Length: 170
Image (tube, rainbow, N blue to C red; front, top):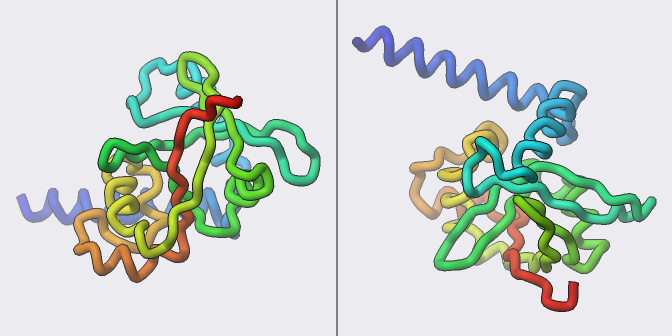
């Protein structure tokens, strides 16, 4: 039985390294882009996907062209949050900041939303919840999802968190 447990841990480590390789340099490579496109279509339709999965659309900061990508929404204390698994330099984070937080969330329809960046001091419990609902992000955030909150506080400034609210002016 111990052997099976060790093999499972080895497999998880290998899968995590593949996932990190797919996003080497902090950007999705070709394979990650293809897989993200498939997830984007699936999540937008709300078919065979977790309730926490959706697609976010935000205008590009340079071109203004709408960029869309799959996201996992973390629910925490009755609010919904987006987390950048790739950190502060992720393009979508820069685009959201340039758009003053205006975006569109797609899941069985389109909903204009506002994304409000959360102060790093308040991010730790949200990051822990995010890792619980977004297994694909676990290889990118250097904290075990079961770690104490202090471990999440240590890395919180590196991973932007945005509170998602419906934009009534949208």
